[in-house]
Image (cartoon, rainbow, N blue to C red; front, top):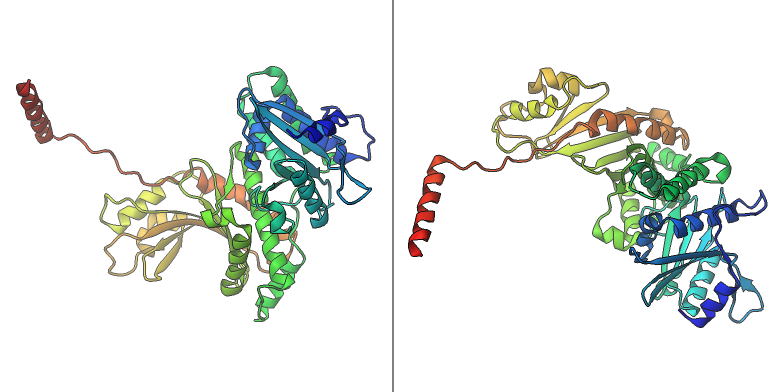
Length: 446
């Protein structure tokens, strides 16, 4: 570590789990509690900070500081990031500056770029920002900064909800053996779950969502660089991340937004492709992957129809030949379960799709088999469609409807749907005889 950083640490304060600050300083309190928890509970630090490039092993030393001050080159003023994390493993050191915002205060590109410069000048590996803004991936920063600034310094972002989600999943998993650490994690969850902490849930989309709805409903045109498209897509991406965190806490597991390799490497590509989807198809889609489920849950917003659809897709068994058998295989999975508002869509190829309520398909699978068809469907969807009409453009009402119905869909479908897995092959009597002959031949060689 550079000697100048050691000097900075000497003048800084250790992060405290119970900080003594004014009631009005929610930002300082939240940051101190979080950083202190990293220092005390290595598993928590590992779960969060490895996503920012830190390498944390069993023998790693984790030290966190607040009230950090750095001189700004070419200026008499000083910069005061909210925290500094230093992780040592043998003779190797990884460090990161932390800048946090609480409540409705957003990060600014100017401040983030200043801390990137400070990190570079002081040999610090990364800048971590935390706010109530959501990012689909820690490397997908909600604030635009110059690419030059991130060539030698990593830039990562976490929403406070994502921090809370990680803490909650860890706390509920019972994987922490140390009773003091387990108690601290429960207290961390308790604090960040409280309204007074300043951690805000995602409650509404950007106001331009309504403008996008009106434009599409009136057969108007959307342009990729317009504020209407940019703000609507940004809100949608943030909503997807929030829903993944919400399901993480509800299922006590890690739920991820599904991103292609290209999208993970470049938020700009992810954002651009999502804008194209809205303009070309008047739709937006995000996919959430819950551990051990048959498929990701797709959340599909259709602006023209003003519907929101939750859907999971599986392929029919390949050891059967009749289409009715394929549909019966699917509907048997929901026997005795709540089938209200659930639809089955059979995709037969060549744009032939037939739909039926699940309860109807259970008794009459022929209803969604095209006349004369003897082949299996290409895939089978199990979906819930919300006909929202005017509520679709309600920036808060739409979020409320999704947040209410997504867990219901998971309970009805996600927990019960399974994908077909072929059975392992059996050894037939003929194969046994052949095997015995081979063994006898091998013994004869010796």
